[in-house]
Image (cartoon, rainbow, N blue to C red; front, side, top):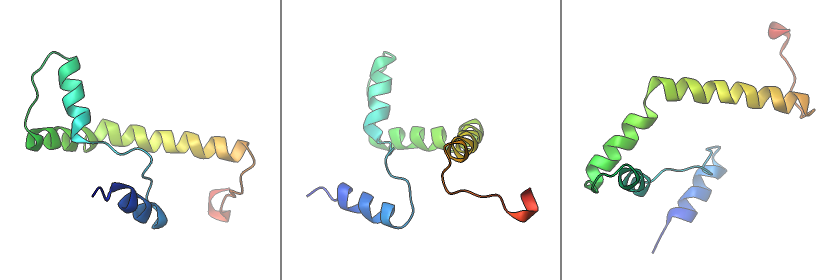
Length: 86
């Protein structure tokens, strides 16, 4: 039985963003597209870890979040500045 949908819903209910999860199969697909043979799952997981622990990736996510916040403010979502940040 695949518990992924149930576990994804549990994480989402607790405030986590789960619409974009990555899987070792994504690494295998990328390897194939680059002309490499498949690696074992442990190596694929290591590649994912290196990908998402990369400082440039993390900085880009924070920057993208700032743009999304600014867009939400412009779209008149209920977001207000605190007195300290005015």
